[in-house]
Length: 93
Image (cartoon, rainbow, N blue to C red; front, side, top):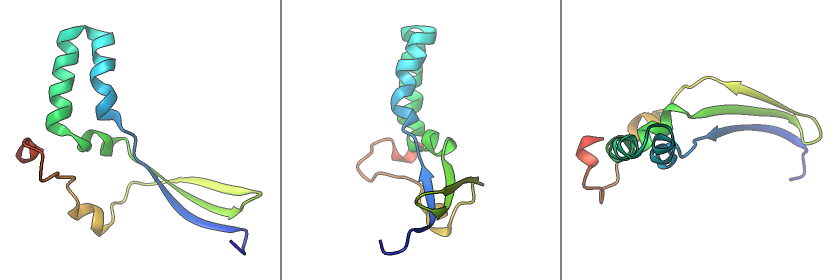
């Protein structure tokens, strides 16, 4: 990196659907955990997509400017429905 200037967009996509059953079990007991597990299997990555955050990083390496930007999906993301062809529940997502 010859230039120390930044101009990047960062997409943060947390894995919430994996932690959802554990949190639900702790908060509401085993029944809530099972329900959250089923919801996670059905909704899959769409739960994670809800919590997606985007940032624009500009400036220099010594003084970066980090700005949270809006949720505007690109054409590629609009076409991407996160379907896994090996997922038996893909039709329900």
